[in-house]
Length: 421
Picture 1: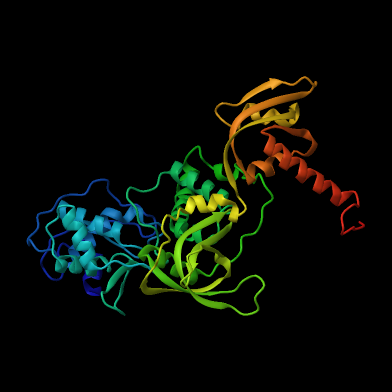
Picture 2: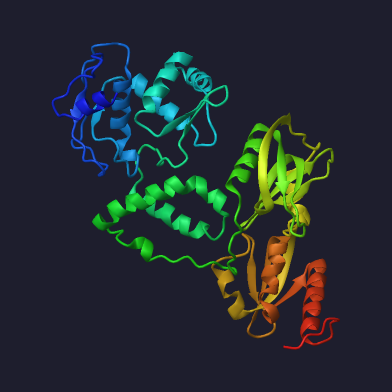
């Protein structure tokens, strides 16, 4: 195989060592990601059956600009076989990234569903050939054997990423780093890397020069550092959810000295900012529990199917208040606000039906809008302090009065735990 590759690097090479396929060679600058020459010439084939050299040449030529930082291929070829190219391109799209995997039988079934006349053996030959040009891995530890993209493989996509797409993705990465836990961003790492590579190559040649250094992201709330999450544990949880199986958990609660071990039935994941929670039932119990993901030390997928409580609704459970973001449903909110505090609502309204009118008291405005009565709404109102007054609905006004009064007692020395500064 190495001999074939070395031969193909020579400009005068026209045939694989096996003699089955005639190929056209194009010059490629290693590491530049550019193919010399804009058009590929069709070259007659001398054999109907593709060999590994031909497949590798075909796929390398058609995808070389889509693999950032790929300097392993020093040559590029193109042959005429659109069905083969389409089939193999779909296969590369369907192969998951480690630790997930897909079998040759599953790929063959999907290709047949797409109208390709292929056998499992054909797919196996394609996979072996493609693994010589792309960072694919075969897991042969347990049957059925499966194929994956290597965990650290560069992102593979076609067509290539445009400079504007790369810029948008780079800015999104900067914004999401403070909002999402690291394990949710990790699967996107190859895309972010491709975006950075595209920007390095493109920004110096366009009006987008240094644009990503001219945009800053400011969080509207107090930023908190996200907790560290065990990558293997979250992969096990994801696997159990995908297969709808039970999961063996080792979990350390906030107050426990030693971790607990138990079986869980995953019902879903809920994220509140940078904190993630596994909602599950434990053992033979039917009442849902929430487990902080950063406290899960280990998670192993089990063969037994998971049980789901009848009528369970994850969204309804999340809105019930167990996570601190209660949702009591829509209300007609009416508040009085000082004009400077309400200035932003002229441009960023609370709702489509928001109405702002002058209040009887000078320098104040009255705002009416249909919103959901949530914990976030109450935190938002409390943040304005004495610059806002809730007028209706009455239950919300009563709750705000109680919260403000309780807060005032903490500062006037009237609470049981008097503290001196």
